[in-house]
Image (cartoon, rainbow, N blue to C red; front, side, top):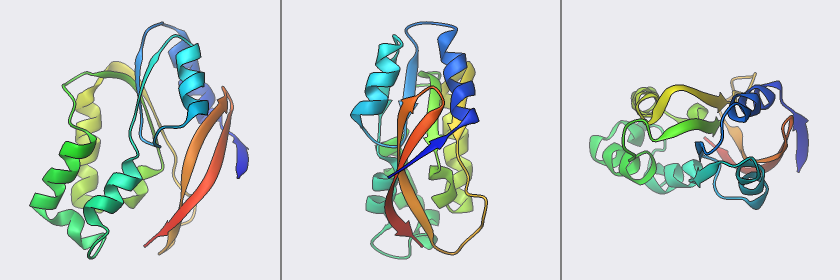
Length: 156
């Protein structure tokens, strides 16, 4: 496990401090540290393990090529981002966008835009180096400026 300081997380948390009772979507999967941090600020948290859903939806064949299959895409999107318009005030997207092929990436970004309320905040993380195989991480919020990363798997 590794702990990192995150200015982006600091900005995300600052936007949440302005109001109470907000709904936040976390795509890193359920973990107690993040749940406690968000709920202790008076907000609601909905967690989904987006990378697990991605692996379950596309990991049986060619991971990136299968992300263009309309039937698989539809099934995946129903399992992950099937929310009414303007359901959330913030989204912790982390690094999940890096694992999406262009057709699915475009749809996911559009869906995120649709399910976030106007003025919402979104936190996304991108690796500085482009590599063929990238280690995925599980993210946990420790405090307003620090995240804990745990390596999960190498996605190709």
